[in-house]
Each structure stands twice: as structure tokens, then as C-alpha cells.
Image (cartoon, rainbow, N blue to C red; front, side, top):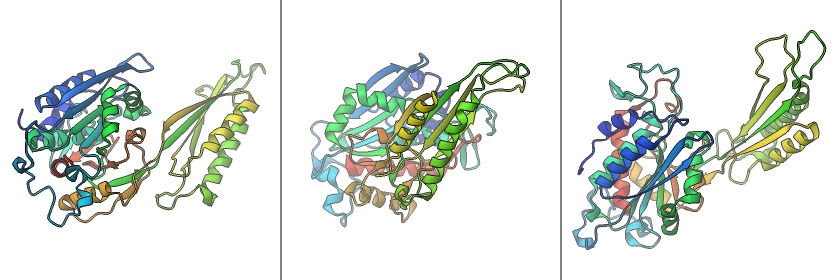
Length: 412
């Protein structure tokens, strides 16, 4: 297939129901076949999630066509300009490791209360200048844009490798990315090459060079159920009350302690968030269990790990169960890195003047710590991700193709 039209590709991708609790095997087979058609070698790795469901990660690589001389390669008007500093053309000039690696995830969030046009979240609908469907924005639209961009640049035009990586379970703890790091030989090849890396999450094609990480924990107290009129039983909430006081104190500290702030983010705090439930729907039962949870957003140099220790110690004192969820660390590529400056330059031709940004969400790009040139940049708005009428603007999709094609030409 010499050409792929991004809108058509996206409509095909949306047809696959890849909510995270389901297998992404079918969509992975589909994408792998597309990539092979475009001249990529594809590594497929699988794992079984905690509920026994098969999950698939893909790492695809297209090498430059053997024998192509630099004078034969078409750089087009989307590549380097005569004013571009040599340090920003590292992929072409070879002053730093070359090539480009694009990362995406194929799972999507649930769509139980879908309110978009057509009524079926897995059947794309174009209405006006928008394409609706679960995953249209987060982030099948991005993958469709990259597939069309890769189809638009021939291997004979490359001087460096191009990788396309598709992971599972980004929406549920970055589990696919974690498995990829542990199990994929092809991923280790990417680390050895250390290319420029684009995490294709929706940013409206703004270049994001840093984002927060995420950590979480869960505590559970147990009691003994009984009829509330008997005076028997053990109310599990009683043990949780002092734990909630501890969590409230942490929340206050996160808000007022200047040592826990990074003013480069908005909001500049760990945004400690917590909740509690005993799951009871009847007032005449003594609750026999109670669960509390907390989640917070870490920043470079502000990891909040002391709070994990505080809650764990308090749980031990109260005799309740504690579990930590690892999440992922912050992502930060220095704002003055050549790759950041180069991507901003490329983005300017597509969306106009822009400055590298910091965001407060997290992506599974934070798991790929062996890669030092990571940038988050993709079509669509984060404001549309996870909504009940998720969509991507067709203009964003087209501009995503243009920017990704320019990035391939620049770095490959």
C-alpha cells in the first residue's frame, strides 16, 4: 500500500473495540499488516494481564533502503531549511544518534455513556469538521496520522531508521509499556539508538517537553458484618477514620508547603486526591470493609515518596492493609535540547508560533526512561479525550499528517 488516507485509516481503527479490559489482539494484527505493507519489520510481543486477557505490543522498524545515496534522497520543502543550525539536524548530520521513534497506545477508555452522533462509539461518524468515535482523539487519530505520514515517505528517502511502537494498557497503569521495556528486544534496539521520540498523545500539535508522573495507593480496613440493631459486628470505618485524617493532613501539606511546588507547572502542586467508600447500600448492616485510595501527580525533584511512607506507616499502626500502585515517573526533556527546538520549528510551519510546554497529565512515555529525547506531540485536544462524545477535528488530523511527515524527513 503506497498511500494511506488518514481519515479512512482512523475509521478502520475505531471499529476495533479496544477498551482496556478487552484484548487488543485484533487491532494489533491489523496495524502490523499495515506496517508490513509499508516496508516495516514488525516485532510482536504478548502478555496476559491480571485478569487473564491477552495483550499485544508492537515494535515496527523501517530501515533506509539499501544503496540509496544522499543525492538521490528527496528532502522536500518540509525538511531542513538553509537557516537551520546543524545541531538541530542531528538525525541527518549524524552528530547525535539518528532516526525517529513514534509511540502510541491502542487501548481506549470505556464508552458506556456514549452520547456522540450515531449512538455507536465504535462506528466513526463525520459531522461537520469533526470525526466522532471512541479513540478518535486518544489516540487512534494520532496513529492514523503517523501511518499516512510513513506511507508518504519512501524508505529510499530515509537515511536513518523509523520506528512505530504500539502498546497496550496505557489507560490502566501503563502496563503495556512496562511489559515492553522488560520483554522487547526491539525496544532495547531503540534504546541503543536513542532516536528522537514522539509520544503521539493529543496536544493540538503543541510540543510538550515535560509532564507530571503519577503515583497511587490503596488502603483497606476489615471488620465484621452484623445487623445494625444487635450491637454486634465490627464497623470497618472506625479504623479508617484516623487514616482519613492522615490523608487530609497530607492534602493540606501539598497545598501550602513551598518545597512541594514546581511553579513551571499549572497547577504547581502534587494535586493529592483521595477518596473513601465502604460500598454499603443499606443502613441496617454493620460495614465489614472500607477502602480508601489516594493519587498524586509527581514532578521532577518532587516525588512525594515520603507520603507513601507516611500512609504505609499509619496503615501498619492501624492494622489495615496497604498497597502501592507504581504508576510512572515524570517525563522531562530539557527545554533547550536540540530535539525540542527542532520539533518546535517543525510545528511552527503547521500551527504557527509555539513554545515548548509542560503538562500535568501523564503518558506511558514516562516509562521509557532509557530514551533521552522524548517529546509529547499529537493531533487532537486533551479536552476531548475520555469524553462521552469524543472527536478529533479533521483539520487537526490533516495537520498531524503534515507535522509527522516533516518529522520523518527531518530525523530520518
